[in-house]
Length: 99
Image 1 (spheres, rainbow, N blue to C red):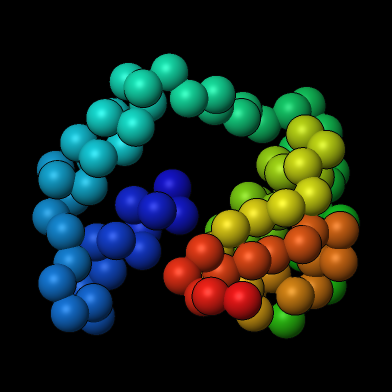
Image 2: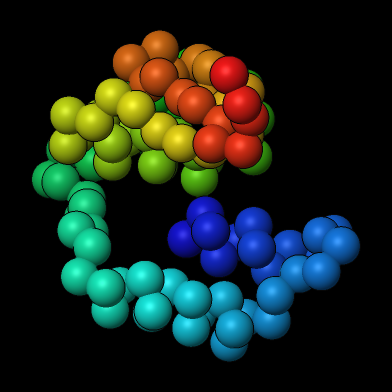
């Protein structure tokens, strides 16, 4: 959801059309990559994480963080590392930055 939302955003220099973005997602799914689905605890985890945010713009970030937390995943590659700072269980890394 977050990928589709961001990559089609009208403020990007060259946003993708929704059908093109959907095809990228389908191509990725077709590789057989593991897909994480919401756990039964998703809503409870999400509500708990939302207590640490101050704006509605963080709902998608918190939903992603909740899914990762419920699956025991503690790392996330993202160019928006600052968006996940309040989720202290996550170690974020920008894959486009060189260390």
